[in-house]
Length: 258
Image (cartoon, rainbow, N blue to C red; front, side):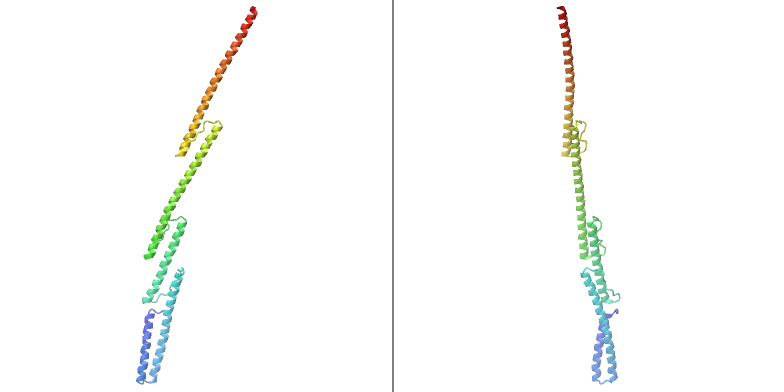
């Protein structure tokens, strides 16, 4: 399209108007026929040029309309491919293309940032370069939301880790207490709960060990009592045997004396 298409169309229309006036004036002044023929040829040429200019202008507006429709449908690939419109027309073309570029950049950045967030990569945020006005405000809002999501995710992971640690502590505590009780049931009084625990499990550890210690003391005392009883029983048996032997000897002596 010619760089001055719009202005050219105006000039051609004005020229055709001037020629029409010249036809009227020449008719009134009775100019020769060849003059009328020349004016007609010039007017036809100007009409042809005006038609071409109008077609170019229409083509430009159709292309701009197509690009705008594509953007409204979410297709940001199309651009107005007119590089020589010139003047205000070129400014309009550049503005439409810039609108498509900025909208495309914002949408792509937003999609990439949200996809990264869904994968746990919260460091990937919308780049603010080239964004102005509501685009920039929206991008800042999305970035702030991503930061909040990152904080929530961190706290969630910490809570999960603490829960796992608690469950592991419960499992280890119950298992160790069970091992000690099983050992006591097998008369193994040497096992104790040795793990490091807190709160109620630390109390359970101390109570279990206290029970084991007390049971070991009782068994030890019973063992000592049993040994003492065995020793006393032996002494009594030995005394009884000695008394029986002496009684027998005395009976034999009495019998010999008789």
